[in-house]
Length: 457
Image (tube, rainbow, N blue to C red; front, top):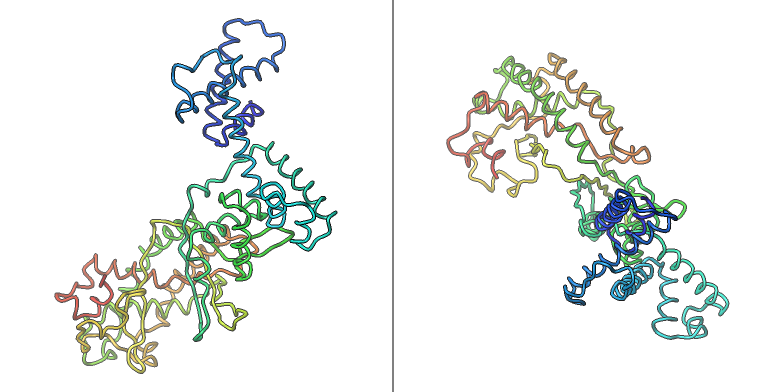
């Protein structure tokens, strides 16, 4: 049935409709065999059935479009193909336009000028500054390419009607007048080009067909992404030049973090309870400082853990700016990040990452209750050397995370990952555990506490 399917696909230009038509043809053949019909030439009989079934399908399509009335549909259409031929001519025109859309810019210009604008070979040669013989040769090549293409059963890719979206992480060091990488991938077209070419070398025509975008437009998009080094070209085929982490890998990392977090969170609380509280700032109670202590301890211990995951921060660009991008397929399994921000000259204060309110002074924060630590006192306060079990647990996570990343990221992109240790997400897991178990008490006035800053939405 494979040749029958490609016959159906060529005439319907839609995989789902082609499968339905193929099933109709197969059913009619089976009915004939079950009825005991004597068939002398089975191959010719199948194709006669195929043409008849297509004629019925075409007439029904014509009826839906108002070209014929329901009463005109004849179940015995073997000798009456007028409507089917009319539909077929329309579909051949669609195929012609499809192949025109897949021609490169130069070939497209020659064909359009000659056949649609009625320009002579001499005129086209002068317009493109090419010899007459070259134009004639290219016209012949174009006709051959288009004829072969029209005989191929190829359909637009899924992204032509159901584009996907990616979220991006960017690290950037941009000076005034320089532009970062986000500008290249803000629109849905470049995002789907990068998705289609990810570890999948594609010609410009492949990308054009996959996204359902004509070559003159696609070539411009490819040029922009290639100049930005987000696409690379090898032997006439394009590959994405940034990591796009799959939904599967993200979900595996999510599950791993939650699993490690179940053991990690109680260990952090236990370590904090054993701290020498006499070394804490005098103007703050231990209960007020628990949240910041969890985050600071985890961050400090995380920096001590051996990290086998290689990542980049930024790449120097031609205009002098430095930026790097990493993409993420859409997933619902996302752990919010909790970040530490600088506060004052030497201290740190807990703040949420990507919060609309960037500094505690924008809220009515009671500064006497904001945990502030001098950086040179952290190691002494947190008793780092006594918590090797936590460091070992984090190293276990990092090793397993590396295996997930290596399985997901193509080898040619391994050195361009921007994945870090994920301590900012473990902070969230640990803090949520501390709240759920009652170790941290929710404040009465969320606008006047460091915890309120973290939880503020």
